[in-house]
Amino acid sequence: MDEAERRERLGDLDPDALAELEAEDEADEHELPDLPNAEAGEVVMRAAPNPNGPWHIGHARMPSVIGTYAERYDGEFICRFDDTDPETKRPDLDAYDAILDDIDYLGFKPDVVLKASDRLETYYEHARELIDLDGAYTCSCPAEEFRELKADAEPCPHREKDAATVREEFEAMIAGEYDAGEMVLRVKTDIEHKNPALRDWVAFRMVDAAHPREEAAGYDCWPMLDFQSGVDDHLTGVTHIIRGIDLQDSAKRQRFVYDYFGWEYPEVLHWGHVQLDEYDVKLSTSTIKALIEEGELTGWDDPRAPTIKSVRRRGIRGQALVDAMTGLGMSTSDVDLAMSSVYATNRELIDDEADRYFLVRDRDDDPAVEREIAGGPDAGHPPRHPNHEDRGRREIPAGTVLIEERDLPAEGDRVWLKGYGCVREADGAFEWVGDDIDLVREEGVDVVHWVPAAESLVTRMRTVEGDVLGYAEPEVADLEVGASIQFERVGFVRVDAFDPAPTPEDGGPTGEEDVVVYYSHD
RNA sequence: GCUCGCUUGGUGUAGCCCGGCCAAUCAUAUCGGCCUUUCGAGCCGAUGACAGGGGUUCAAAUCCCCUAGCGAGCACCA
Image 1 (cartoon, chains in turn green, blue):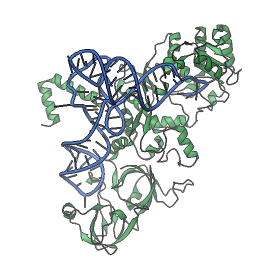
Image 2 (image 1 turned 180 degrees about the vertical axis):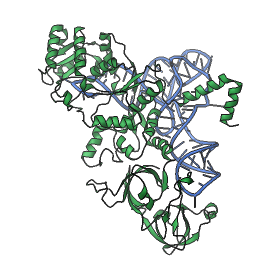
Image 3 (image 1 turned 120 degrees about the horizontal axis):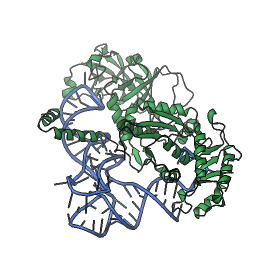
Image 4 (image 1 turned 90 degrees about the vertical axis):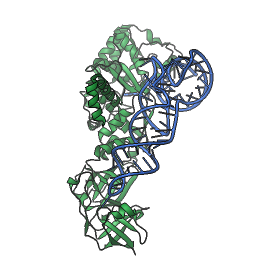
């Protein structure tokens, strides 16, 4: 009896037991723990990226997890751009759409897209209300001076200003009557709170630089993250917040504002930082940006860059990334993501559709070597896919072939050219032996890949470790850009371009290539 | 310095709130076998973990304390 039969029989004997078993199965499929206090149809979550550059792989975690939860609970997925710093983390105008595109690649679509920089008037309104509730005060202390007072749990003289004065000075902030550093609005929390991080934090400050978005360029008084994000989460009905441990004090800070307004704070989950193995490059927008500017990387989609654009160009499916990210769970500790688990998932996703081809690599330590075949058929005909004979067979001209030096048999020994037959190495040439498969099965002849010496395509394969040159079999020319294929005994690749134009950067195409492919994984 | 948090095999994770069914789950990785004209896949098997110490208890991965290690916040960044 197999599993299905056993279940059917159990269903007859004891339907309740079967239902229980199936419920367990369903629970097991959840990589992510259930959300606290979550009800189907009432969950609202948000990703709040700062659009200051394209995303690295770590950024995939938030949309992956939120999107997955939104699907599980039939909830809402808000994408809110927290672009309230026109200066130090200055938004990149291209990043807004690039980020939405990356979310789309992961297979999710936000229900709502917001930009904080569109919502300044809303923040001002709430600040005014907070002032009226005696929950905030304008402060002209130099930052350093206040820091010392705070460290000693001492209030500054501005804390006791009357509301009218505070209101007046805040309106002057909005009107742009101060320069950066001259005046801030602080939330009145508890100046003696045992955690210094929570004492009278800044809600609004003056910024001299104009916001890059035209719609927001006229504002000089900008909210800080904790104020803006706290107000927006409430106003947009967010029920569950997920954020990094770097923001673990944010909820505690924002609670003071929520208490003034009588709002209920959402559920909060924190998680640690993600590190990736495999890459030499740090998972940091600024680091990657710098390496591109220095010419170390050819761009955000360089295969050596740990970015979403890069893995996408390499033919990794968004789903593979989502599975890996949700598999990391919701732990508060820092985690290392093994790229091998992304690759394992992706392999399952593309193996069935990826047709097989040959690529003979030509490397310094393992060059392609040429051999003329004496006797034997004119061509080999290996299948396009071992599990799909219906897709037909390739035609690979034989005659004179290339194989990788490491695959070359010793003088007098035999090797099986896959899809062709068995040959023997004799005086720098191959002698036809035959196509009796028992040679492989019973006599242990190695099976290797090969390409014709004359008709093959000059190929550049871009990998995480750098580029590899080689020769691909002729039929690769018939593929479409974007196709995922497997170079047998080499690995899966995505076809990126035919006859690419040369690029000035090191590591890019030189103009010699017939085809450029990006290496996915083995 | 003050405050907060974390620590399960190579990696990730489940279990911890509500102690016993945990001689600890699942995935990945590595190794071996079967199958296969390669690789991959599939099937079978193996490897391998509760940071350390103390306490409470009939019973601790789970509760308490201490130590160590790691991380984060104390920004007019997000």
